[in-house]
Each structure stands twice: as C-alpha cells, then as structure tokens.
Length: 470
Image 1 (tube, one colour):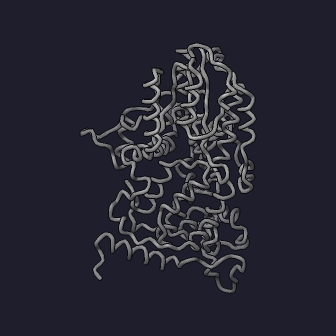
Image 2 (spheres, one colour):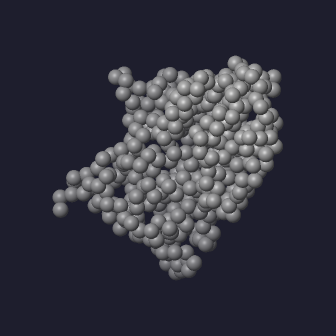
Image 3 (spheres, helix red, strand yellow):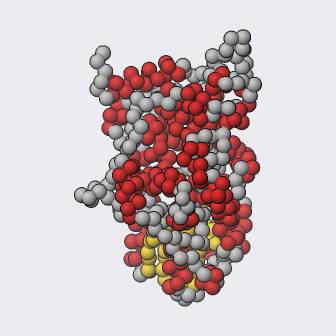
C-alpha cells in the first residue's frame, strides 16, 4: 500500500496516530500543521485479525470516524510499526519530519525511542509530545524526587499542580495542509473483519467522537450531581462510561477535565480521572508491575491451576449471581461496571484462588476499554498484591455486594434472566432458597461456598505473610 502513495511535496511532515484518534487537543498534529507546508497522517495497524480482542471492534469504527473527519485523508497501513514506517520514510525522500504523541507502556516507550534514534540518524526532524494523560508521569514526585506509591498523596500533589488545559485545536485552514491518500486506505479500514461475538456491541455503543462528546455532555447535565453515590450501583446509569473513548484517545482527559472542572459537583469524577492517571504513573515507574506482584510476598502465593473453574468464570456460570451478571455483561457489551469488576476480580483471585494474571488477560481480550495500565493495576489492587492495594484479607462477599448495590435485582435480572422470578435476598443467594421455594434448575450450583472460599484464601495469606502458626 505504501507504493500507492503519490510523490510527496517538499516540506512534508508525517504525523503518526496511535492511541490519539482525534483532531482536537492533538499536540503532534497541531505542531506539524503550524510548522510545515504539508502533513501526511498515518495509522499503522498491528492487530492479528484472525483472533482480535474486543477492542479491535472499537478501533475499526474509530479509524473510520477519524478518516471521515480527515475527509478520507488517513493513510492506513498494516504490519510491524517500525518496519512499516521505515519503509515509508525510505520511499519518500521529501519527508522532512515525523511527529507523534507519546505512549507510556514499557515496550512501546522502548520502540518509540529506537525509532526516534533511527530517524535522527537519517537527518529527519523528530519530536514527541504529551500523550493521552493529564500530566507527564515524571512531573509529579515526592519532595525527595521519588515517585508516589499511594494514591491519596499522589492525588493531592496532582491537584496542587492543576489540570493542564487542552492544546489549541488546529484550524480548518491548517487542516487543508493534510495530504490526500489513495482510496485503498478507506477501503482497507472498511474491510477489517468483525467476529460474530462482537456484533452485539453496536446495540450499546457508537464509537465516534461526536457520540462520545454527546455522552459526556449528557453525563455532566444528568448524572454528575449524584455521581459519587450512583457510580456504585450497576443497575442505574450513574457512570460516564467514557473509558473506551479515553482508551483510543478520541477524547482526551484534558478535554474532559476542562469541561467538568467548572461544575460544582465535578470533584468525585475528576478524582476517578486522576485514578486513571495514577495507573499510568505506576506502570511508568514500575514497569514490571505488568506481570509481577508489587508485593513480593505474592510471588509465593500458591495459585490454583483450575482451567474448568476459570472457563466457568469467563462464561458467567459460577453460580454466584452478581459475578455471573458481570461476566455476561462483559461478553455481550465489551464493558463491565466498575463495582462489579472489583467483585468478579476478588472472586477469581480469592474465592477461587486463581492467578490475577489469568483474569487480567481475559479482560484485555474482552474489554473495549482494555487499557494495560488501568487493567493491570486494578487486578493487582483486587488481588491484594499491588500498589495501594486493598488488603488481601479484605474479601468481597459477592452476595452481600449484590444485596447492597443491586438491592432490587435490576442488574442481575438483566444479565441472568434464569433468576428473574426470585426476589429479595434469594436472588443473590439462589443456592439457599427460602422455605417452600425450589432451586432454579437451569442455574449452576456455586463453584465454591462463599465462606469456604474465603477461609481458604485467608489460610494461604497467612502462610505467605508469615502469620501461619501451624
């Protein structure tokens, strides 16, 4: 496809889009448009479409949306990023500069640094700009220069710095500098396949920037006031659900903060936005936390190898209603309510004693907002092994969580219709029917008793923490 690109005019800059699929608040694009006569916009796709993760569905739609905003002037290429871009540079001597917005995951940072060096060696201008965060990860530190490991002091330090304003948008006149590309790019994006299990996502999402901005404005007008209370209730629309737009950078966190911070009830939501920031901060300063527990004691945790139980957890067939509701919501919509994410993660790692990395990998396969930093930090937090983690001995009881946060059973009935006839506590404890009631025949028995699973987890915690006196 590179060979189908017409010869580039002099003073052309390449802007490499990655997880910043927007024209607004895009520092790399704005800089290129201000400082060069022509701009080539490029996206390089690296997904294995034979078995794509759920977020590939969103990516396809987001690329279509971005291409449309650029009047079909997005050059879409496929392959290993550095090899594809090196070929593009070699074939187009008129290219004078390459710009991008930063990514912060450990291997991607290394790739970007290597590519930046390669470009400089060939005499091209190259620069990277602040990426999809409110703050650069090296900007907020303790007084002694070391990074924070606990969220609350990090949050206070971040608030004292203040939220960064969005970068000025490129003008319509400047956007005329973007170079046209072959229709093959548009056709290639349109031809990206869709797996059968993803087809229902369109019933729940419209992955365009315009739809995301509409959702954000509606949230600010309808739900922000009660956000701190309603965000815990999965059966009501109390959350913004902006995470997929944030993950792909169709809307930046700077834009969200700028819109919401003048509002009187915004602080609880802005705190959650900084929690997202904290996840990227932790991954930047502790890159091994992707796969290694931050609490070294957990290296000795005897996780169970239980593939059948893992499969039943993935399929929403554990026999625990709130857990099953969450896992089914995930499969059918590509999303799970955050309160329920904590419950299903606690159940997997504590009641079933299955390694948190198994859960993290499943989430990264099935979530539309599968953000490495947030996902891995969240799983370590729930497992008790991470930075600022919930204590391991804090074991969520999914039945109690259901009774507290889904008291009328709205959420469970929506995703576990087999239990629709049950009422009250029986809905969240169908294994313990009341007097004269019958068990639901087509709903599985629990994989483990809640008390039994909790005690097993606490025994293992006592062993690895040195508190086992037996």
